Amino acid sequence: MTHEHGSSSSSCSRNPFDVSHRLACEQLASIIDLRQQCLRSSAQYIGPNEIGIDYLNQSYHITIGDCRIQLEEGGAEAPLRDKILILHYFTRAKGTPATGKSIAYKQLLGGVSYFCAFSQRAIAPLVKNFGKSPELLMKAAANLGGHEANHGDVSITVCAFPRVPVTLVLWRGDEEVPPNGNILFDASIPDYLSTEDVTVLCETIIWRLVRGISSTQSSGRLGTFK
Image 1 (tube, rainbow, N blue to C red):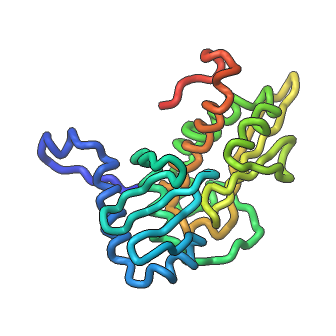
Image 2 (cartoon, helix red, strand yellow):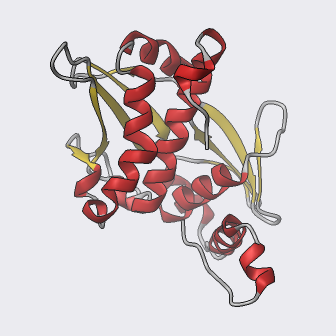
């Protein structure tokens, strides 16, 4: 997600995500062939001013004219960061088929440089909250439509978007080696999300999983969403 910084104090005080959202809405409005872009992203073409798209096991409606994004069920407005991710996915989608080849974050453009931040924002909370109790990951992932995968000791794949599977991997560790984890993607993901968007998406997924089990776990163990 691209942030812009102005020189005035008013610009500095503005939510940086507002600029990203405005630019994403402009990209949405500039799409000439909406039907074709729906095919590329596996979204549903509803009409010339409306599409439907699935995100983290929920269906959303996007109204093109006012760039409104609402849950199909209940009509609640999507949070700002989710709006930006949804718009970036839809407008960036190239329709590239899944390769079946898993890649790690460091294999993304700029991934090596940003891996430390990615690890702190996504991998570390994954391991902290689920590493010693990986069965909780399986339970929490059900709310996001996750299914079991074949990596590590325990792994689940969540279809964040129709063409963006995200696989969370855990190794239990033992008395000498602490639990560890990783997050994997299909090699086609750069054709759908930027590296920065991948970071935000993974962070979002992890903390939704954490919140999904927070009612049955102590707040001290689960930490706080930032």
